[in-house]
Amino acid sequence: MNRIIVGILALSLLLGCISEQKEEVKYTINITGLAEGKLTLTDLKAMPSEGFNAILVKSTGTEIENSWKGVLLSNVLQKYNVTPDYVTFVAIDGYMSTMELSDLGNSYLCYEMDGKEISQEDGGPIRLVITDQPGKLWLKFLKEIKLLGKENSIIIKGKTKVTLVLTEEDLDLFEKKSITTEYKGETKSFEGVPVTALLNRARYEEDAEKIKFTTADEYTIEFDFDEIFSNEDILVTKEFRLIMPGYESKYWAKDLREIEVL
Image 1 (cartoon, helix red, strand yellow):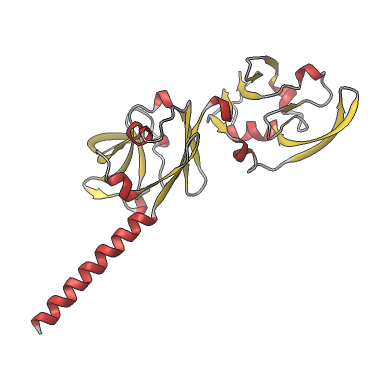
Image 2 (cartoon, helix red, strand yellow):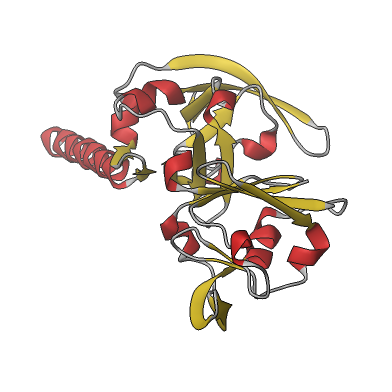
């Protein structure tokens, strides 16, 4: 009888370990953009880790201190041999947070909090912790890390609540609009994302006065914010071309790389 009980316990432990291993392999963070790859929880745990205390500051000013264990983001990125200008973190529910790489020196991908594996309730099993940034940037339920450079994306920044760095694939997620208008003496049709939609997603500040468009060769054009925001026919195509119906062709910027709200 004792042997039977011992055998059952051993089998239970074995099945538990197998279940845990499968769970770790199942949870995967996708690496996209300038490099492609996958990061599992098992991969992360196999990398050199650090334990540290950090204080999460909520928007209300409340401070919560916890102990964490995880891997520096810079160590994770080393294996991809790229140096992105921006990094976008994407949660399971689609929420995104974008920061410049230079602001992520103290960022960790953590898998333990207060000596225990991070539960789903606490945003696990892998959570972004940035020790010198506000708690709203400590992304929970992380599912994707986008490595972005100025050469493969368009940046919406300035007087906005969030910085958007969008690739061609990201633009495909927006609702498109088609227009027919005159361009250089010919009637042509164009399809793209209204600039208004991009500004709304970036959550522009109420005191915005100007908007500046900059191309890859640093050609810039500037307008009053209200003039652009009130015209839903001004588009950005998937080729990052600015479509400006009713304006001279010199304002139809090609290879657009930045929209700055001033």
